[in-house]
Length: 479
Image (cartoon, rainbow, N blue to C red):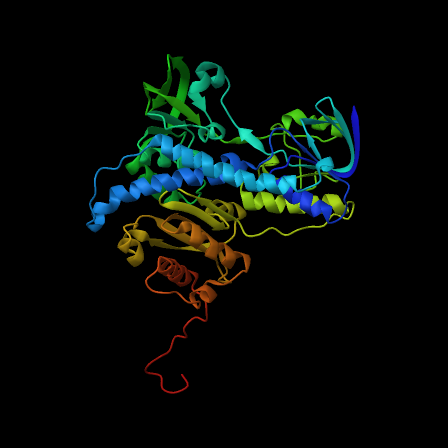
């Protein structure tokens, strides 16, 4: 049995764990990191980067198919599934390699491989080979795909999650995608554009993270016009039929049965906390297995334990996980001098085509808060630059605070949403007014001119500034 002593122990070494390590090292060199499985972040291995590689291939195929719109003609699109996946895996491995290079540059004696579990508030047993005693701890164990009970047993290797997709050596002929969140939407559309027969099953007509009902409705209309979306749908049973997967589902009161080569379950991700034995650390959890924590400090209750990244799943995004890790690692390093770290304005992007984005406060959050706000909008059907590029689909809705004119947030499905989202999240973070945004430059012709259109409508609805004084035309001077 090996025994290690540390000021800070970090469980998990993905994006949040790496951020926590760097921040903790600013306070102490007695840091130990514990990793179950290979090093390398969720983003690099099975998330952001390989999914964007697959989407880039799909965008290329789609661009060729759309070329006749511009009077450009070529032969039929031919997708080489093996070549597509070879590039995805090769570039994925390159991104993972960058992470491994960073990890390998850090002292080997600070790294422990194995599954950690609490045996007391300050002790961790790693497998059966190492006992780590730490004054403070950071939980950064990430998350895993959620799979409905019994599906793995019923489908075997006909069931895949996003953790499996990027190990494919070629593309399947057909695929059922169960779940219409970010992962399900991105992969379903990309694979459909690469020639896979895809059917997307959603419990409701809300696709992705959008909360504004008008933008959400636009997203459903656009995406369901391009690929087969079954919604609202309930998957009743799954079974293995030879080398195929069979789904029986109900939609509009009628039951249907269909077979696919594989089933991609994209029903969300679950924080990896169950195996830690938090009770041994004196940490209480709710009925979902989650401890109470402070998002601005990372601290669990008033304890010496901190949590970061997908382990708490508050904002499952890389930049949020990096911030989480920095906050948790800094406070673990300086404990008991725990400090509040204000969070950045919210920003989320979905890389469908058109893209989706949420910046600042969402429509749902504003409604729930009771805050008084107005809305401005622009439809991209006739927006100049968007029409030039043949990308004139979508809707942007922007929100401003009554009485102050402060810009609050936006939701969008439309062209260049990843870039527009950045501009609007910065405006929200710096608490600009709508008028200040309108006083900023807008080049011509660019998609951002659509943002100006929406902001102008919002400003009219806000009715900011002095009200006009009623005058009597017949009353003479001074009346």
